[in-house]
Length: 79
Figure 1 (cartoon, rainbow, N blue to C red):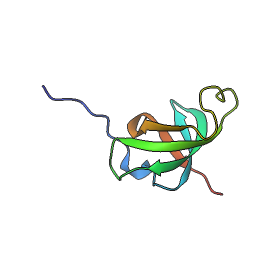
Figure 2: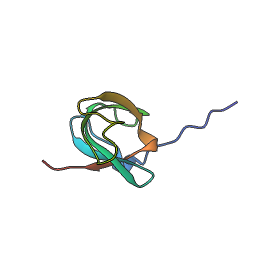
Figure 3: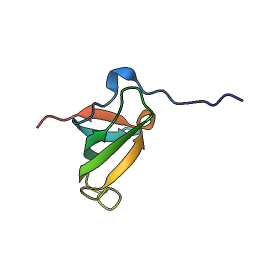
Figure 4: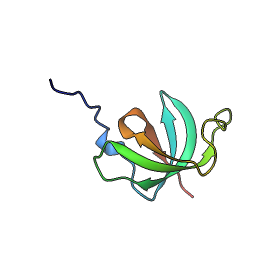
């Protein structure tokens, strides 16, 4: 049996070392730095910089986590 894998949009894949606002299903969740990510891989390690209001309990500052890239949207932040 073949497994189905979600494929991330290659034009919006995060770049290791850059900062992004991380969203899911149209809701901005938190800002984060991509601490480890290899191009076209399924997972990215991130460190939370700041959660959006209402999400602080779920995404405390400096929390490290691994995200499945295809399930999230990454909007690069400047700064």
